[in-house]
Length: 157
Image (cartoon, rainbow, N blue to C red; front, side, top):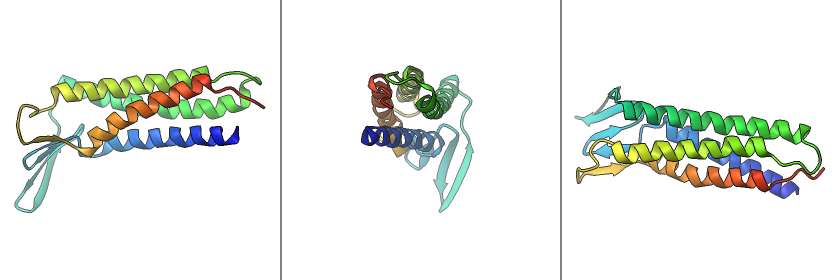
């Protein structure tokens, strides 16, 4: 039982780290010498790196909000899990934790889908998605699996 508990906590911490990195890093997309992010648009010219605030698009603000919500809900579900370890009766399930974790996975998926559809330059041949975008897509199934594990998990002692 201890191995399952430690494995679940490690998976949850991995989810949280992936969400934090994918939300904060400037590597969601790249076209030629210009990189796009949720927060900044940066250009590399003459050996210099110049950044300005991202455009004020509604879809970008939606992605920003969804990624922040996903990170907050993942953190809250970890806190709820630790709280429920001490308060749930023997044989009880971790439904509140599972609900927050599954909501977090749905927020990540929604944000990544919106960014995929609406990102600048997707029609351009030189466009590529960055590693933070890939981390966001990787966080989605891991967070969903973690949420499903919390539904099945029961408190033994």
